[in-house]
Image 1 (cartoon, helix red, strand yellow):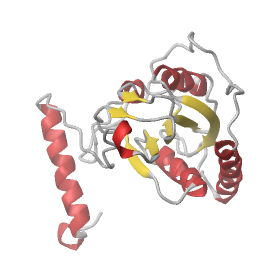
Image 2: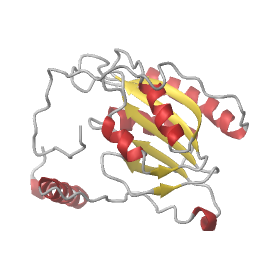
Image 3: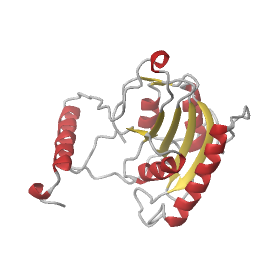
Image 4: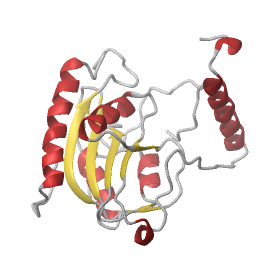
Amino acid sequence: RFHHDSMPPRDRLRGKIDRLCRWLAGKNIFIGIRRYPDPGDPAERGTSMIYNLYFSPTGGTERTAKILASAIAEQWNHIDLLRPISEISLTADDICLIAVPSFGGRIPTTSAERLASIHANGARAILVCVYGNRAYEDTLSELQDVLTDCGFNCIAAAAAIAEHSIIREFGAGRPDADDCAQLTAFAEKIRERLENPTDDPLVVPGAHGTYKPFKNTPFVPAETDSCVNCGT
């Protein structure tokens, strides 16, 4: 841990913002901080936009999403779903990479609630499920259902391994160099799909509509000053 005086100014500012958000959350006041360009009125902006949306309480999902995204295109508008987001209206020309972790074979409830504020209007979606080397079960299928309800056109999906968020021995060091190579190879297939669209529906593993029940876990995270109030 760096001494305060040795921390870069940007990190000090980020720490102050996080402390402010925690204080507001304690007062049941929640604010959304936009870390992305406002797409504005889809009818007026005239150009397509690409977004990388990720829900990543421990960082593994964010890292995986950015590896895949950077292999698809150079410039992305990154949206951190740990923070509440304002309503977003997209167009069919827009592209979104949406990555969530698998929590007991399901998508995190908080991420689903925040994704529901997006009006996709046919925007293309690339689904990413990140799991801790156990199983992801209904995570991809539930994510597809949530995004379809938002109006997305789901065109591709991937399940990737990252270090387990609680039992670090599972998937330790992942994604590693081999994972990066596989994600890069998959990115090439995604680019081909984007350039040559098809009407074939996306089929992913897992149940639709009737998902695996959530089960309570005996593990409870200990709250520290680094808590970001992600809602999980």
